[in-house]
Length: 100
Image 1 (tube, one colour):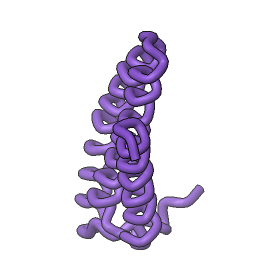
Image 2 (cartoon, rainbow, N blue to C red):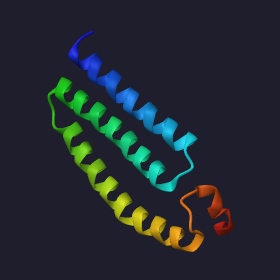
Image 3 (tube, one colour):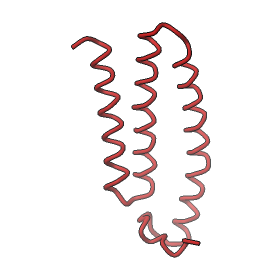
Image 4 (cartoon, rainbow, N blue to C red):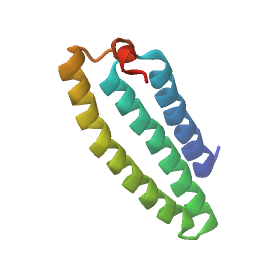
């Protein structure tokens, strides 16, 4: 197995671990951390492909992904904190009364 395959295998493992955490866990903060783990897996795959091809398109996509992740955290953390104040729990099943 060469370096590229190893990095892609690691990227897939990170994404799978994050996806498993989002599906299995019910804690809102843990789910946010697992989403970030999924994004890091995608970033690793993009950087690997960019390095393999020798162009900067993958690096630009990684930068865009970092911007999106930053905006996600900047919006999600205050929302989660407000929900915790309202429901006094981090369990996402307790937020079912917020459905429209």
